[in-house]
Length: 149
Image 1 (tube, rainbow, N blue to C red):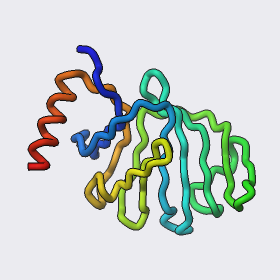
Image 2: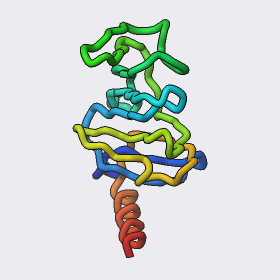
Image 3: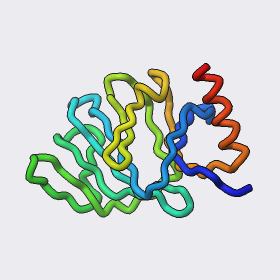
Image 4: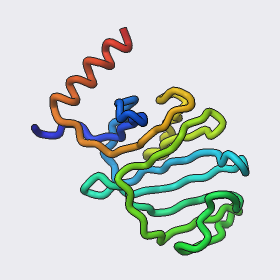
């Protein structure tokens, strides 16, 4: 079947579809507030032709748990943030555990999609790039109509 819509698919640990955001770009940023330092953090990825996420950069405000310290090129930005690039890492999808204090969001073309509006609290979330086939797109459209009433 011919793909008709590409996008970002959010699934839970059971691989159930939780949400779908139409997406036809090559770059996505995932941002949050670090749970220990309580400072902003962003990771930017390029979506490859095979749908995998290739790391482009991470930007954070303070050094702490989970901070890259042995890979990549580190640059201190003029606003006081730290940017790390040149980390050779490709993943099939991005995985996280969503809790409200984290304030996770997806940023696409400067528009933010907050996970608090897309997934239930305390959920294992996988963020995939997906090309929907016609029947998948129709099924999602029908299910969305039922949700909206």
